[in-house]
Length: 487
Picture 1 (cartoon, helix red, strand yellow):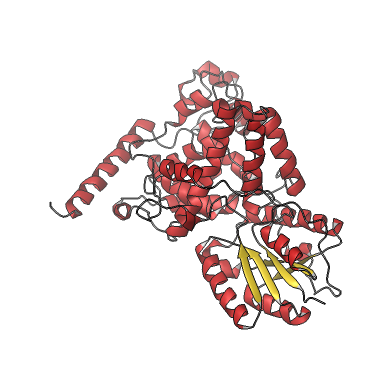
Picture 2 (cartoon, helix red, strand yellow):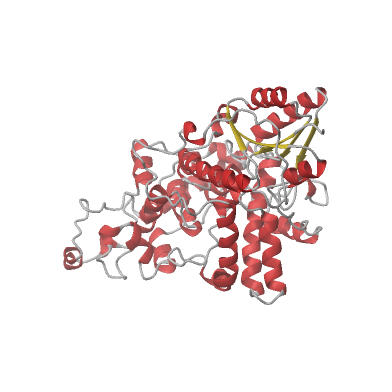
């Protein structure tokens, strides 16, 4: 009988379009489905609290899917190398397959593991399960990695179309004897004291949910996507970012189902293509992380090492708690804390506020998002924070400083988003809900608001903060010019 093959699940917690799983089934013989929780191996980038909550529910869903196939998901916690060695010894497995990860620590780990187990005579293979295009396959004419999104995405679109998604295997042969497994509840991934995730939605997890969500998006939402995706109160986005991160759905599945909807006339082309271009930003983030592995910890633009960041624990705390006195910023930060999610437009506004109004280092925001977002993703998180701060690839220009109240008036004109997440302001008229400091005494009184008590005054004046930030960027520019050699 063919010896078992271990399929090591990582960021691909699904059965359909799983190249490693399909290859293991095609190989013949029993398949052992394994997930390893190795927080120590991830070092600084061990999963944050919200991500662990989401992981629990993703694994629970995968367990159910595998049970329907007469299979089990083996759970082990600890060093990946030690656990893999143990299971290979216990089961006599002669093959080890996994989907590739692109985080710097994962690349180093996987390179060592592949060499180690190949030396032991195992068939060790890795597969693309997370991206449309492998980062090393897209390059400039000079053979260099791209640093600007638009030409990168054009190059992707000009390359071979992503392969069609693989179907779910009809059967996944089980081993005669199962290796020992932890129980999911013993990992204590869910918070209890206190249960800060009590308002998180566990129903929005799993492979079945992700497929249903994509169908609903293409059937009912995508037509409004291009025009309304920046409106935080409008429900027109796909809501698939966490499912993509955990691999409950693959980008190839999204790509091909969206293209099919366009071809059949079931989805209008322009908004659907705009949706696919957002997949392109995800691909670009991974492209950057792969080629520039210090992206999560160091300024992509080295001249930003000279930037005069401030250091204020009090200001950082007020931003984290949604007590800045700017309603749109506070709404976003409270939505994040209460749900583990935040609308993308609002993410840009709160990030700009931290780095430009408060002039606090982008790494403070990156760390906070890493711990509080259910879709916390190293590539997206690092690239996005550096983009807003101005220190990253294809970054927003230094003089682009989001005005929090005009952003609110433009994208939340009726105040629906602010009223949902900052209910103490709900009684203000639409004309004042984004500028409560301009409300009259009677308007504040009628709304039950006492500025400085029931809702804070703005922690910094917008124009003063803007001028301070622009001055800092000008100082940075002059320092950079002094360091540049003469022609």
